[in-house]
Image 1: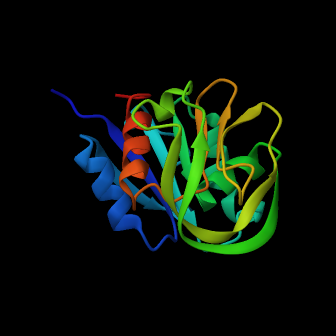
Image 2: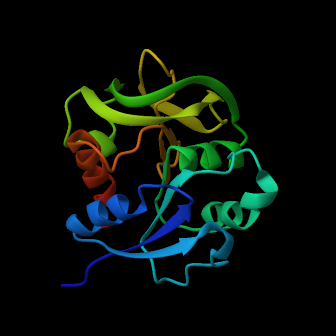
Length: 187
């Protein structure tokens, strides 16, 4: 049996080992590249892309230009986590804003009709570590999860290919179940 391959783009997250381990436990092989070394094309080698959190502000389009070109030109599902979601939002024309610092767990309400959430309840507990939020959802995207602290906790493009999560899914059991839902999009 062939296992799907995911290209994990390291945007400088502290939780890269946890993220890769979660994806591997879900039966996925992972290859990791630094954001400054992303390929121009996938060449059929990977069935999905996961964008980790960031240390560089996601609105720096020049820094992320090769990554933006890759994700907008690829024909595979893409999941952006925390800063990775911000990169997706900015690439598609969304706007970001600074907000209160959040560190720790939070309750998030999700749209159970979305296939990403097939393994979770309507309210999930997720881990947050950020001060940057999606202020304006890009045209062609819809909000599929929200919380009292952030009106955009999850978003998805209308074609279903691009998905973003404000929370770090690699830390809590509900997050890992959501990652499992993402694997169903390419496995």
